[in-house]
Amino acid sequence: MNLDLHSHSIKSDDGRAKVENYCEWIRKKELPLDGFVLTEHRQFDDESDYRNLEDEYGILILKASEVETDYGHVLIFGVNTDMRHAYDFGAINLSLDHVIEASERCGGMAVPCHPGRPNVGLAAHYHERGPVNSVTIIETRNGGSRAGEDEASIHLAEAYGYRGVGGSDAHLVSQIGKCATRFDTPIRNEADLVAALKNGDFEAVSCQT
Image 1: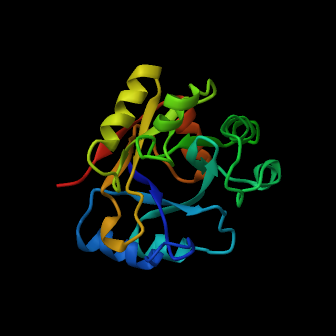
Image 2: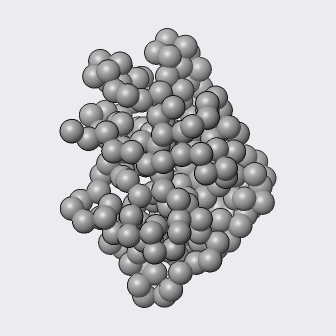
């Protein structure tokens, strides 16, 4: 099962894509994608209901978040009420160690994204300040990466023994599905996604031609 674990809709301040248009594009282009996760910036969208789109297009649509920490940006999966009280999703300098610990304690998973990207990625902060011991998974394939950034992410994963996921980091319709994560087990909801991430039943894949 292929899921794009990193995408943004118009709910994000810099997103330019409607969720329905993502679905239309995936079907029109016959992308090898079974679903995608909306990781809106500095928030969790608990208002939008995409079940009708899931039924119409046969595509799984899950919701998550992308928060900002002292070690760069982080994807948060399995968001729930307890987690949203554990730290402020809208803050821009959260403690990465606290975000990972609190997310796991509340039943979710925190995954640093585009770690090879300057300023907002894990690698640059590791170079300056050293590693964070609680990290176990990072995004090794990102559809928005520039030359050398994914290579830096993969090198980081190899150096520290991290598992890797993939996502498009789409902000425009045409960007969806450029990278994804292939799971060995079926994913039907956020709980299944978190369980698969914890079990390690996945690999990052690039779908770019």
